Length: 159
Image (cartoon, rainbow, N blue to C red):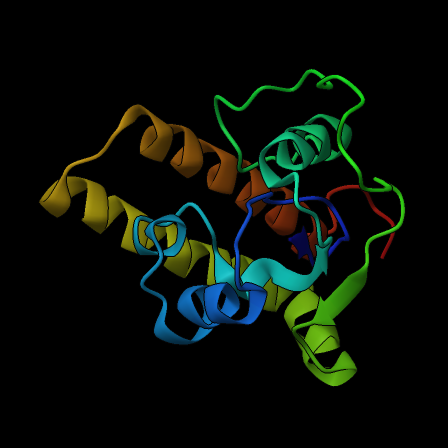
């Protein structure tokens, strides 16, 4: 999964891509969405590969892309037995229309949405508990908010 800046956000595997995407983006009941790791508002598209060697190919993709929301995952390339071309996915699922991606990419909108996501995460941690990964996730999303706010406030003086 890639974010609005085309940065690798998350790598996972599934036997049924469209079912998994519905779980993440429609029902919002996957573990990575329900505890806040994945902020679905940030995700623009999903690249996918079809393979019989899903576990080793997932490791290769984790090492190649280093997604910022995969914690504790091995980042070393496995042996060369994976059978996918890491640079060329079999396909891409665009999750947003161009106009929606433009809207979501506006620094004000990104900052406001990220604040809301962080607020939901803080509530989840307070009322439902948390793991070490949830704490790391909160800090990653805080860093993203800082980037968004810097752009919104034009702290680099480019606007």
